[in-house]
Amino acid sequence: MYELHHGDCLEVMRGLDRVDAVITDPPYSLSSGGNTGSGLNESFQKLWDYDNQGDLFDVPEFLPWMTAVYSVLKESADFYTMTNDKNMEKMLSASREAKFKLHNIITWKKNNKIANRWYMKQTEYVLYLWKGKAKTINNPSTSNFLEIKGVTGKMHPSEKPVELMKVLVENSSNDGDTILDPFMGSGTTGVACAQLGRKFIGIEIDKDYFEIAKKRIELAYAQKVMF
Image (cartoon, rainbow, N blue to C red; front, side, top):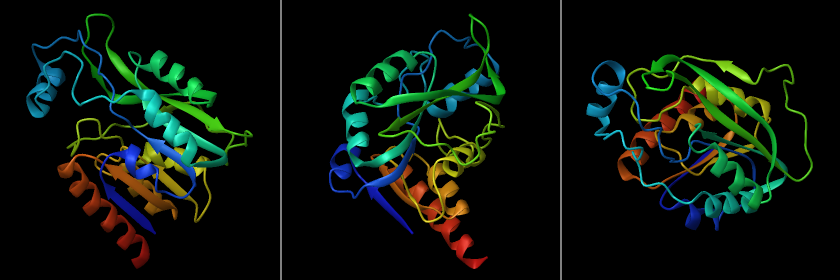
């Protein structure tokens, strides 16, 4: 029902069978220039040892892994990737070079605001891309503006809510389909797949986060089987 890999996604994806969809939150530079003196930003910086310069992780070039994603996807399959305003242009450019086409840009409104000198930030974005022949999502009435509370008590600095990932999983796959997340982080996409009856393949290069994801996903699939 699930398959987890600790390693580099470029290497792992070369050995995978084709998957029905890819949903991921890859490493990318954060927006710098925010206020740092107090409140949420200060707590974030202390908790995750962030220096407010925009680099919280090692950020791989977008084109190589997007090209690998294109190769591992089945024909007429969907690809969702999280992004922010700072990286959207580069990611869109890389996606086009990797032969993807853009369906839509989904806006996620979080419950928290991030202090910034140039308007407070309360949104992130999802690039909704596809390969091959376009297909209609399972619930076409879904808005491209999703208002879902962010995660409290995060296990990963960029952890996304399960409910957000469930919207994407449910709209672009069916029961028994296989979803790949090449940057699994703390395993949120895998938990969403477990709750919706999808198979999941996750890849994570960081050992500590891999172990966190492994425990979360094992529990999520075990609970699904119990009920």
